Length: 455
Image (tube, rainbow, N blue to C red; front, side):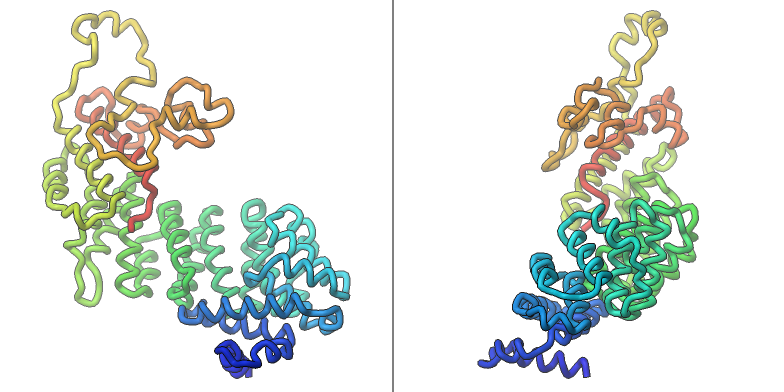
């Protein structure tokens, strides 16, 4: 029945002379049900339905603008107005139509909360919607309201948000609502440190909505979650989740994980992800993918492996890398070059050793500020000093130190040399280790500028 309605609407929008009058003859709830059906097909991977979604939103908007108070005496039409708003509709239309409607107080309260949400006023929306239990509403409206409330509470009340997102899925399985609820659950579970919930939501998303046009947002949350929860998620569980993806998506996911893990110094995870990316599936191997070779090399730059790493880096075809990854390759080669370079004597080291011993060495030694002269310019890049000066508040006038940069709300956080050394298990007093610390610091700064996801 619903599919027949959609087919009829397709005919109406194909340039039929009586399209306008036929559209007016449709009840608002019929248009919105058709819109939901199309959106559910999109969530399942039918990207060809995207133009139809836009057309149905346009038709619904026109119908609601023309709707009279008599139309909204039918409860299904007023619920449809609210669902339309939460499905990507025009907030101006929702507000105007609500002002003409005569309905019960709870429905009007829901409308006010949704209008606040659509107009970017989260505190007002939360205050209005908090007393309303989505599970007591008709299923079509309750599912969307649970999704909205879960999104609103994600930051301040993550546990309550996850419960609401579960309610949304319960009320509307197999729909765009469930797709969005699962996608948002992945991110909230990460911030909560709930590895079990993260793995379950990720598994369910990959099983059902891997081909959704919004799956790229899931991929971002999934990669971030794997990095954040790496101590709590086994490699076997990670492999179980990715095995449900097609080979190309699985490779890209592992490449992204390998890159992030390499930059964060998660050697074991980076090596595992790089190996999985190279291994491929179904007889298709990716050993020649320069990204996998680059990311695996980033996490293994030590004095013991430097010759092998330099040899592997020299074999990478730069022309097959994105601009961001070419800069990372340069940074990795700079790391390797610093490790094997002879140590440079500090100014005044030979002429005044006694004075050097008497004066405490400040945290902001020259070696802490990476020398970027040997690296290609990066569009939009700012030095640490420029970043601190550009920041507002007290940090803008603070002394140029790594601690000041870390305290600045707008500048990238930069660890002092001592912290870098401790994290890497290196000795700042050793010339080779000191060069590695400096070069790793440089690599971190570059990646903060470039972002974490390869293209």
